[in-house]
Length: 89
Image (cartoon, rainbow, N blue to C red; front, side, top):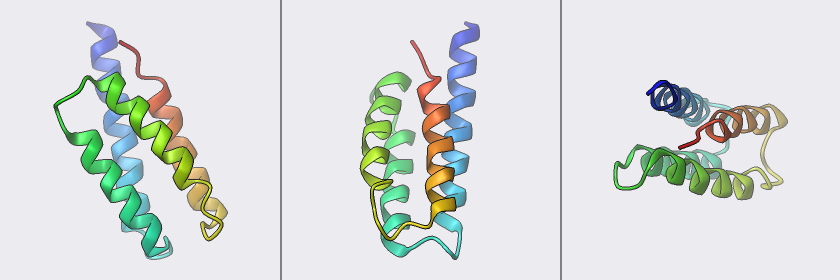
C-alpha cells in the first residue's frame, strides 16, 4: 500500500517537472511538443504506473539526445527520469 502511494507521488512529481519544462519560454518548441505528448501518455490510465513510467523513460532518453536542447532543460528531464525510475510495482 505504501509503495502504491509512493509510486503515485513520484508520478505526480515527474508530471509536474515535465509540465514546468513544457511551459518554460526558454524550452525549444520541438522539445515542448515532445514533453507535452509524454505528459498525456503518463496521464492515461490504461496501463499500470510502472509500464507508463518505463515507456516514458525510454522516450525521454530519445528526447535528451536532441542537440538543440539547452543543458538546464536536459538536467530537468533527467530529474523527471529519476522520479519515474523510482516507480516499482
